[in-house]
Image (cartoon, rainbow, N blue to C red; front, top):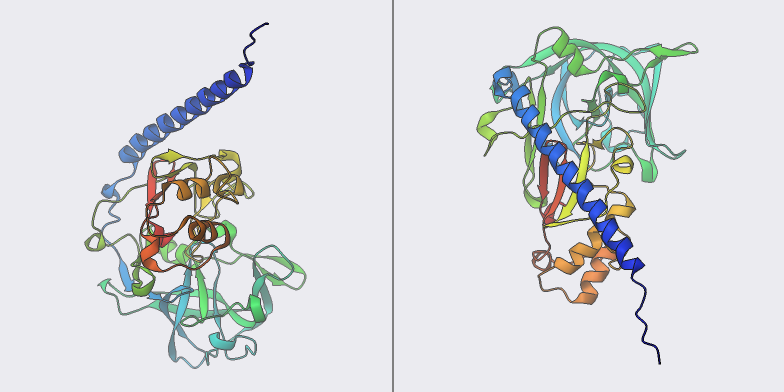
Amino acid sequence: STLTTPPIHHLHVYNLRNRMRQKKQKKQRQRQRQRQRVLKSKINDDYGFEDVDYTSSVTTTTADFSADVSFVDKNDDTKTYPIIVDTGSSNLAVAVKQCSTCGVGETDLDLDLDKNYSITVDYGESSESTFWEGYRAETTVSFDDALNGSDVSATVYLAGITETSTGDEAFFSGENNNGIMGLAFSALSEDYCYNDDCDVSSTPILDTLMDDGTIKEAFSVQLCGEPQDMHGFLNLGGYEPTHMKDSLNWTTAEKTSTLGEYGYWLSYMVGVRVADKSVSFSESVVNDYGGALIDTGTTEIMLPSSTLGSSIEDSDTVLKELYDKYDGDMSSTELKEFLEEGECMSRSKLDGLPTLYLELDGMTLSVEHIHY
């Protein structure tokens, strides 16, 4: 009889892939350390961002983070409303008394609307996206009751919202918001339409405040606490160091690839880890827009299915590693249903879930289970 051995070429391929992956991860870590050194040398407190121009509390709900903003109506009365703080858009808009579809977001604000200039802003890409429509108005906007710094104001053009999406895609939902304040770059701002030409620019509120020297070229949003105890602050012209436990970590803002310039707030992502285990990750997929979107207008962490996985059986994915590294009181069946189907679990049973690490270019965010 002849003794044969099984072929080993599959093992060679596996080892080669492992070496290639390790080499790629090593290059990513080297690039990240290099970027950190650059950031530390280029961006630091010497810019004076720790000397904030204005700080106010942020109102928090289960759906949104809102700041109180005051508007002067056409009768010269000042009215204050909670406005969504949104780093994922750039337009400033508030519901006006003419809006019949604003629902819980309706106001009695009476602005002098110029109906020659109309605007529609969609939040999504489908035909059933959330949206609002309105007309341009000129008014004075102010941020009052400063906790630090001083109150600030500016005369601006903004959109008076006269119609919104309703039902499941309602623009106004929940509570504590009557408008939206986009804090992204001006290239992302939707233009007004005059007759058939929709190219009348809309200047974001931050640009106006910075251009006239009211605030320095910086802002920060601090969102704190767990779901049952949320709170935070909006800082214009910097950040408030007394609200910080440690020094800031910096990452570079990236240009939005579809615009060719700065639009969204994006940070280039180089990897994802569950505890000490790196998972499958494609930089080109995750950074398709130029980087990962940092958006105060949503509460979700979104990852590609190739990284997240759809089942605990999907190797080298977040779900697989969460399942394998869980050290709590859930049974294996409960854990599987929780990870794959989103079954609700008591807080105590979640305590065994590991930390998720999002590796940005220049820093790493550690995310505890209560936040993912």
